[in-house]
Image 1: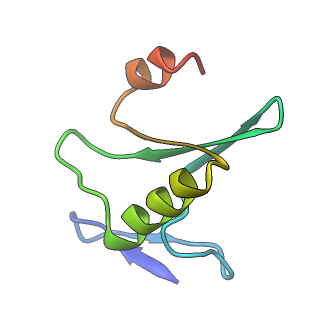
Image 2: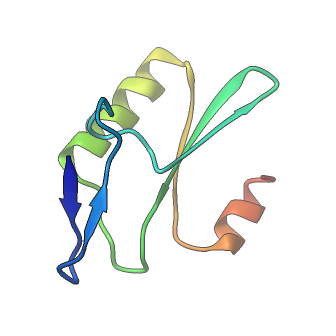
Length: 77
């Protein structure tokens, strides 16, 4: 599957990747942390919103929308 970005380029997704999975996956001390990386104006897809909601509702980890390295550092990562 390929994703068309706003500039018209493509980003290949792994063949069996689930829609909505965050861009960066972190496991720290057995705890899942998903980081969805967006530009300053980028918005989550509906699949990303569903993934975030499902994860948070089940209490299985954290989901964060990050737009810069500073955002990641503020999370202590």
